[in-house]
Image (cartoon, rainbow, N blue to C red; front, side):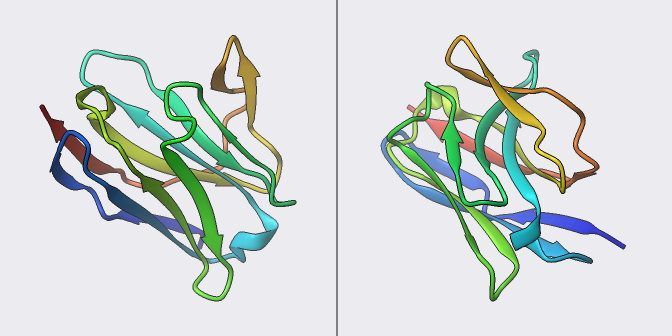
Length: 129
């Protein structure tokens, strides 16, 4: 059974850093396309970062230069390093995975182009000013 489990969320002050982890079980992360999304209360879910199975990364404009997506194949874990956090980064963060690419670009934003098969339960990130 495929499972994704996020961790690493918490509360930080603006300018601080957090590293989110997405532990993958039931399949080999290196063979899958991975993505991080976030959803703030009252707002639509938005794509944050993607990591294709071939290693290519993409970021939505609002986090470019501050966030880094990576994976550790030995640990079967995908990470989202978040630096220079801002209050507007406050949201529930989710990871997602699928063997077929599921994210694309539109007007500087990462968007879902198809529904990925697997989602984690989310981890809360709160950034105070």
